[in-house]
Image (tube, rainbow, N blue to C red; front, side, top):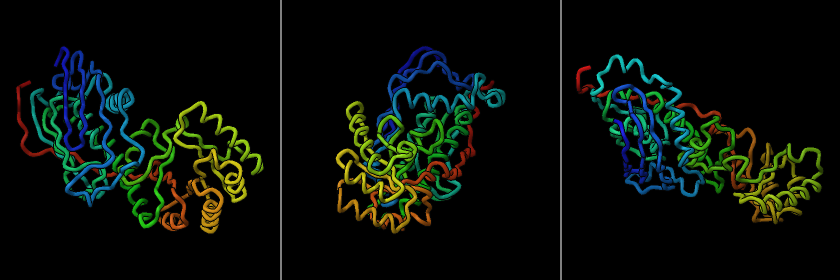
Length: 365
């Protein structure tokens, strides 16, 4: 396809609209690579929760705090995924073996149980590779799936499908892995008021997508980075006694709020003396306090102190949280449990792309 053309794609299942402006030669059909494409519009923010016939099997991510990237950020992420696999030459094997007009149908199938995350990216990637590829999703983000279940159907250029295959399975398997592990943690605290939160311990280049996957799994997104929230950790206050720490936090947080639009102000503490000082001297500036590596008795005492001195301040527990310990931590009365493992240790979900037997020969080479 050459020249310039508007392409409008609607994903009704997810209420996502892709509007892409393609310039130059798009070569998935005749050269096995893509070129000259420029995004003029972006993927709309995905709704936090969807109505569905299978709502009982879907994790409610309403107000979870993370959406898919849009604009230049999403474009750069998706293009980078494909560039890594295609280089300058494209798919040299498929170009040599498969006729340009050959058409096929493929199914993305789960090889194990899991929770879906990243469904809108399947259509987005397919349309970067070849706008004629038709994608049908059978589930929505947040849905649970089972081993052997069909997740997506892709129909169109066989070259385009093969070009897309590994990139699609890699990113989808990664995000489903994050969502699935997050759901395992969230399920263990559902009888409490506590919510599972992510951290900045994410894969470089994938933070926005992994945090979105956390929300698909029933977790809650923390700050996106160093830029959108104030979080003073142990290294920020090293060497300060509790009183001086609280005074410095009070002043620094006030300054940061004047200069920046912050999601919150949080301070990490590792003992009850620091907590008490913050609650006494800084509770008007501090929104939340991170209780790092505290024992269960200390967590319960921290909750009691908070309830007595500054009930509006939220408490978050962190430090080596596992599936075995998370329920007991949540039952202490804290508001959040931050779990780095849901992103840095989530196993990849095994997905496969299976070709249906009938493949159209198309035109001769």
